[in-house]
Length: 349
Image (tube, rainbow, N blue to C red; front, side, top):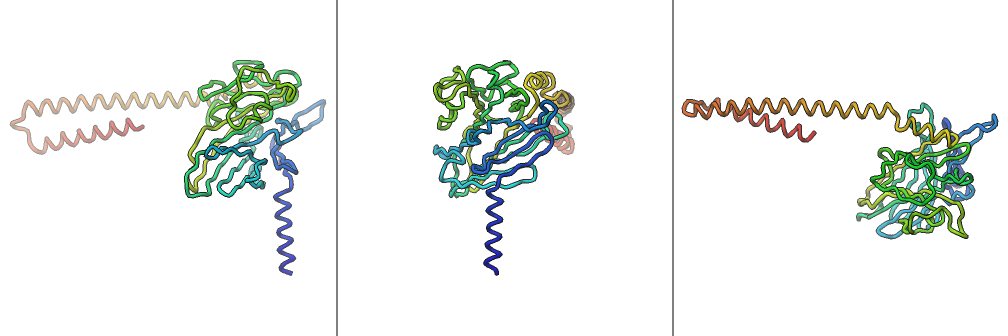
């Protein structure tokens, strides 16, 4: 009897690990593929009066979007490397796909998010987590290839705030001022948000085939189109990169990207240009900076007045050096210590 119960428990556990997930919240949906367990993202749209979920990344073959890790200069593609075993689980606000090896674990979490002031889920936070099982530090780098496809049929693959139609491959480095990278579609769109942390260290806009074939960093010459004849025509993708980090012994490193979904490309592009970043957040940040500057200025003013008063007391003490008492000297020294500590505290803020 015990063996039968144990066997049943194991079967249920295996089914839960292997069965695909399909979860929905607000305007968005996350599924995982039956065979590969790769995630797929969707947006709810209305077409001719009927509601349907439009895929935001290419879903014809979920393997075209993937995560890669470099561990001490050895490169592994999650879901393809035999050194990593793949499992999945449902979490409170999304799904978690785990890739586990003998020495480390890579976890991809896709979570629903209400972004850009929305009251309902309209986007995703994708978290990558690496955990070190060993007793020595590791040097790691992370890459995520996202197979964008929404704008390919109409020839408008990618839109930036500074460029309404990106036609050539390009690199957005750490100093890039672009607030977002849009993949615009006829019925649905998705944007990688770049205006604030968390964000990738760099993003490459490139032909999918060239990006997929690169071992880690995309080292092909940029400023080329999105076609690699005869293998991949009119085919774009985004490569998200996180630079080298130390993964401590028994430690964990986490990075994130934020994705906002929207409706038809023309409408979504116009809406983002007018409303993103949210004006409330921008105004709050400006007000906070103004208040901080005012406080700093007030503190500086008070420090100057205190310094002048103390200097005057010291000058008086020097002029009356023969009659000054020990108590007055201790008082001056105490005020000097107080002023010095106050200045150090203000500087640390």
